[in-house]
Length: 137
Length: 178
Image 1 (cartoon, each protein chain N blue to C red):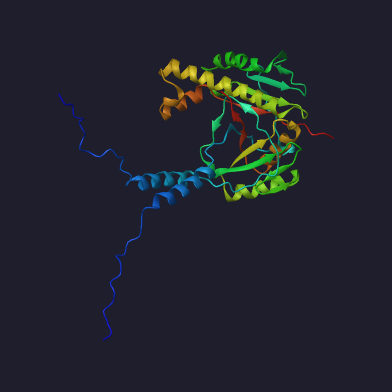
Image 2 (tube, rainbow over the protein chains, first blue to last red):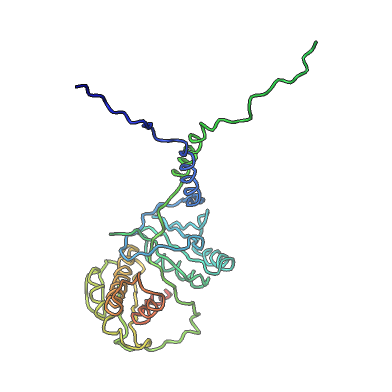
């Protein structure tokens, strides 16, 4: 008896013609999801860790204050003095009333400095604050 | 004779074969530049600034107040009792639970006071403990009353949970050094 291999008639290829469409879709997703890193950070910091952290829902409202390991403070693209913070944050609060200040402080900072910044924020009436921390599970 | 007839051009097509490669390249670029990591942190609203002359001290009854003091060495004093940082949440939870059914003006006030030389990390750990205590009690209350997690509650139910387990965290007014 003769065995004959059955060959299916259909082609054994993956259709690649829709590949560009799929990739376009992915591309669009990443383009929308991307926020280009517009700020360069001049200070060194390691964030503290915490368990009960929340996400910041609205990234557009966030304004950052960095505190580096040698007590340097950065707002936007500048290293600033403690005395200037109140004015800068007041201006920000005027342009964007619901601004959230995200404090990205090094975990070895002194609380004295953090308290001083808090006081400036209170005086500038920019009172929504977020102590940035890495999520710990 | 000169042939005036125009040559027929090849059909107006462009090769779409390299399209996938180009988009791949773009895709790679956005993949590399995207930072998906979201900002996480502990959110609070600072109290309004009142100049010293206008400050009015309102007396608060002892049982409403939980004073947490953290000194420069990381020692914690909770209502004059020395405890370790990880014990704060357990301690607080009991106090929060006992005040669920009280009116709003009798809820717990959690006051955190730190030394100027205290490490920021210690402060964050303390604040984290307070947050944990409140979130866990809220979770318990939501489970007990509505049988669901806080995240699955409707807006009104969530509001009720927030009212019942009302969070007041206060930072002690820093003392001026003269």
